[in-house]
Amino acid sequence: MITRRETALKALHATLLTMPGGVTVMRNAVLPERIPDAGLLILRDGTPGTPEVTLSPLRWHWQHRAELEVFLRGADLDDRFDALTAGIGAVLAANRTLGGLCNWTEAEAPEPADLPVEGATTIRAAVLGITLHYTTADALA
Image 1: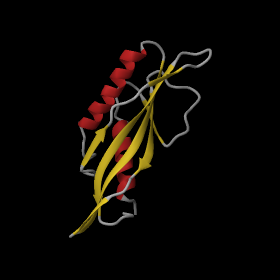
Image 2: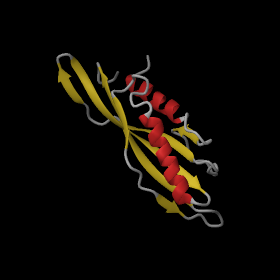
Image 3: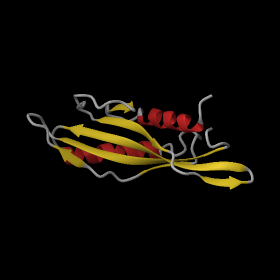
């Protein structure tokens, strides 16, 4: 039996796979040696945090914070990074409930940093928090 947590994370990954422009999307992967020209997104499972509990009926209400690592290299990083993060926002906004698996999904604003690489172009990197709001009938469900 797959838990709601895993089902929601798989749905988020599947949603991110619909990103236009040939962006590579991975889940819980090791950062490869080469960043693809169109960009790289690595979804990390993050943490479900501490749920709020209602007693009647007994339900656990989670605000699971997954993390999306964003990597981009090459020229014109400002405009391309802006377009990439706006694209992530648009894909999430088009399916806030991930097909009914979450009550709501929302992303945090990125905090980008440029990583200089000796002998290569600069890499722009950021971590975006994505909060998945969902409810379960058991703490481990």
